[in-house]
Length: 116
Image (cartoon, rainbow, N blue to C red; front, side, top):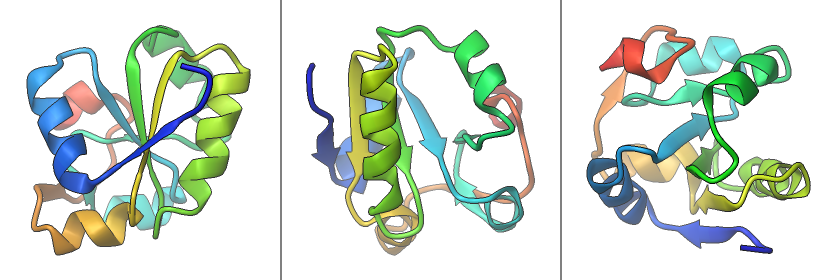
């Protein structure tokens, strides 16, 4: 994949349910993330980037989410430039995820497996 693909919240949820390697990375700031985020999401920030790199392989599907689907595009392009191969941007971001009534959780988990 040379470009990221934009997907709907429903497509992202389906991918997360059917592909154990798929990761949802929320790029909102840690405080906002702690209020509410998609279930199982990794909070990807500049501070957590080293941990993200250590946890996830370049060939894993990475779905990026932000507030409204704009910032995640920039992060998606960054991941592609840094060797990640399967990168997706969530259309409408967290707002669309919430509107679709997909699972949410509150609190902070550095590793998404801690949140499940």
